[in-house]
Length: 632
Image 1 (cartoon, rainbow, N blue to C red):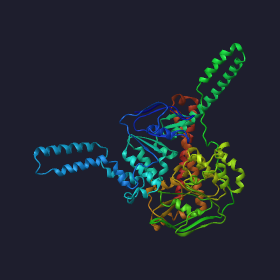
Image 2: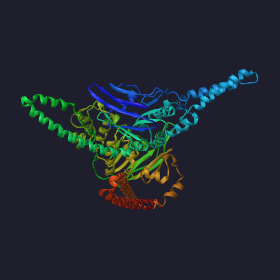
Image 3: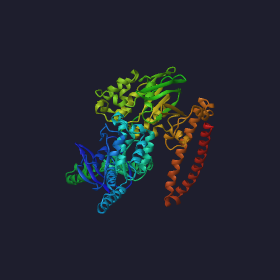
Image 4: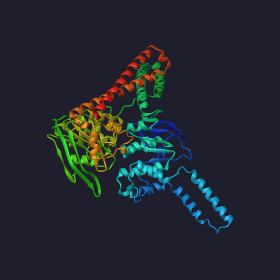
């Protein structure tokens, strides 16, 4: 067992970790969560002995292996992904080579005693080899590299030719193949597209050891974690449950904590008034001093406040565009010999909200840059409709801000003239209040830079919004606010993202990028996956135009407006189904308590449960009929 007991850590005057205690048993998949700056990465560094706590005890068994996914590569980039992965199995192959070498020495010229000795050594090595977990290293390497999205031809090319994201995948592959007792992952979902992420989730769930990861991806946490450790106000809260249950449990704990805080504050104020009265009387001065000492020893209850509770994203409205917003025809783009997009066309009408999905390197960001006018296509053309005003949020938007400017100067520089007088108000809406507005960009965290970039974006009018990976560096709370803003955006929108939660219910179309082609699906990612009856989007196949036409001919009989109305009805039904399922689960959880079940309130709950279950059945039927009418 691995355990932390009463860990304390200071950075100067900052008390970052206070009396942090927890232990890890076998086969736990733990999500370590908390707002930016809470100390999550610091805790990982204590695991790896990179940092030592000021006090407390860390107990790690001597044979307990730990591997940490850091941002620094520990391999020679002139080597290939296959070679780097093979290095993990060095001892296995050394034994295999030794057995082959010994087997080659066996022959008729060897005397009986020597032959017996060699056979015995071969048997010993074979037993040792069989005891190893690696039954077929080549097969395991292929499984991991393919799962993480590497094509066969990439296996034997130097890592130096890969982008930073793909290099990080090599690092992930190496760690997975090492199979330590504890795998520490710091936001691994930042480096993976949807396809790789879905595979990675399954791998983590079946991983034979313990996994602890930091993530802001609620879908990833929901699908993998069976325990939540939350760092907040220097302390850790332990929730031995899945993420969705944690959300409900945390809300209940928060309400109790806030009530306890209010009660404690009343008691403190009452005692302070008493101390003040007693201090005024010389006969009771000593008593007042004694009461003050007791009051000073009370452990004060703290209420967590989220940095972004006041964050408010509202995209400014402008004149509507024409009905046809965008027409891209026969677009092709290559980078050297790499043909990313090959003669592809898309068309968007006013009000369309679409997602670009697909494996990294398939051209999603390339096309959005071409549409934004930031990149020139090799061939083809993009025509914008009447009165189209573009606002473009680049994948590295927060990285291109001027470090020498303050947050206020940055916003004033990027904002439309009419929004400059409101700059401080806008910054306040993005949790930059008071002196925070005067901070230099150079001292801002990744999350703060992302929020500042968002503030710049909402200070420009648009009716065509282009978002390329807008959730990078945003925490859970910020992403929820961004999703709501996207849903309420009155114009046309394209979003590139691997965050499934941000895509769920926000778009009406999905364009899948694969092998130079773009496939259009009428629905969000969840709808596409269910329509294809697929576990992951690797099972999508680019179909022959005739076959595709045959499948979509009936759907195309619907007008654009009819499709839009149907999609809204489907989305409304899905939201009601989610709400009903949540209410039903809450009542079912309460009814488990026998005392509640036999009470008058319990009897009312049983009646309400029956009504909700009946409505759920009706809503499911409505959803089925709507989807059928879309596909028939």
